[in-house]
Length: 459
Image (cartoon, rainbow, N blue to C red; front, side, top):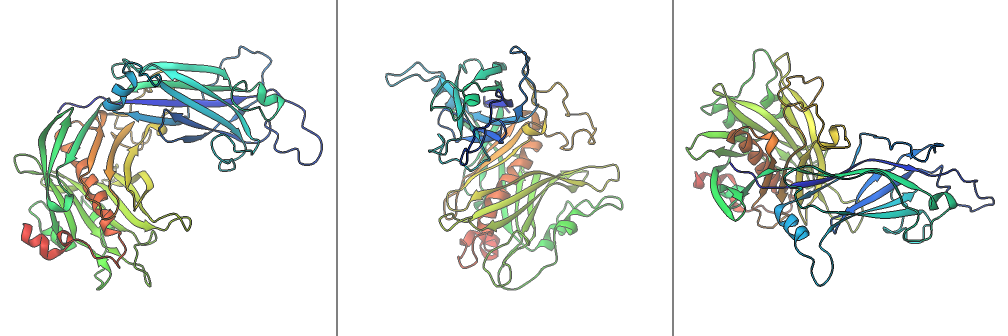
C-alpha cells in the first residue's frame, strides 16, 4: 500500500508577556490586561479558527530571556496534496499563494468577544501574521518560528499601555504526515467495495458485507468471540439483552473482507439504539454501541467500542448533532482488556462533518519535530495509554441525514503495520456512518436497505 502525502502545521508553546502597567483608576475601567485571562484565535489561510489559552508570564528583567516551552499544542491544521499544490503554486494576479498563519490575541475569557476583531469589546491585545513556505514540508519537518514576537503594533489601537508592548511566544512548525486514503464506492449498507486512493488512481482493497441480524447471531459465527481465560467478555459487557418492541434499531453489522474473501474486521451493533421513554430520540444517557473486532487465534477479538447518541442543539437555531465516544480496547496484564477513550465529540446531523481520532495533543509539544520518545512497540502501557496509536490516527467523512454517504477514510501511516490494521479503521468508519441513520429520530422511517428483510435479500 502506498500512502498519500499530507502535511500538518502545528502551533504550540503559546505564552504571553506584558509589562506591568498601573491599573486605571475610576469606575468602568474595564478588565486590566495584565491580570485577566488571555487566549488567542489561530487560523491558517481560510481554514476555521482554532482557539487556545495564552498563559501570562511574569515579566523578566532580561529582554533576551529564552522563550519557555510549555509543551502544549495550541492548534493543528491538516493539509492534503491538493491543499499543498494550491499553496505552493506560482502567485496569481489576485495575490500571493503563500500560506499565512494568523494569530489574534485577546484579554478576557473565551466567548466574551464579539467577532474575531473584538467588535468594540475593547479586549483585543494584538495580532500577528506569519508567512509559511510549505515547499518541501511533505519531505521533512520545517520550523518557521520559535521565539517571542511583538503583537501590539498591528491592527486596532491596543486596549492599554501594557498591551502595546505585549509579546507572544509560540512555536510554529510543519511536518510530513503521510496517510493511507480509502474510499467506499457505495453506501455502507449497500455492501460496497472499498478502494485505496493514491492520487488519481484507485484500486480495490476490501469488500464490505452489511447485514441486519439479532445480536445473538454474532456468537454463532465460525469465528467465536474471544472471552479470554476468565477475563471480561466484551460482547456481553458492551451489549445488553434489551429486546424491546417498538422504538429500537438493532442487529446491524458490517464485515470487512480482503480481496481473497477472508474476514479481516467486523463492526457489530451490540447495544441496540433505543428511543428514550417518552421521546423519539436516542439519548446520551442510554446510547447505542458498536464493537469493532479483529480476527486472531481463530476468534473475533475486541479492538474498539463506539457509542453514539443524538444530542439536542444548544439553541433554537442550532440543529441536533450525532454525539459519539470511541474507546480502544487494549490488553492488560490480567488479560481482560481495558477501554481507553480516544475520541469524544459531535457531528452536525444536518450538515455532517468528520469523525477524527488525533492523539497529537497527548504528546509533549517540542520545539522541533516529533517527540523522540515513541510509544510504538514499547509495550509499556503505563507510560503511553493508547497502545500503538499515536499522532494523527484517522478521520472519516460523515454525510448529514438523508444524504448519500460514501465515506472517505484517512489513516496515519504510523498506525498501520499491515492491511488488516487498515481494515479495522474501515470498519469503524462504516459504524460511525451507519450511526447517523441509527440515531435518526424514530418519527422518520429508515431506508429499506437498513431493514432486516432487505438485508436477507442481499445475502
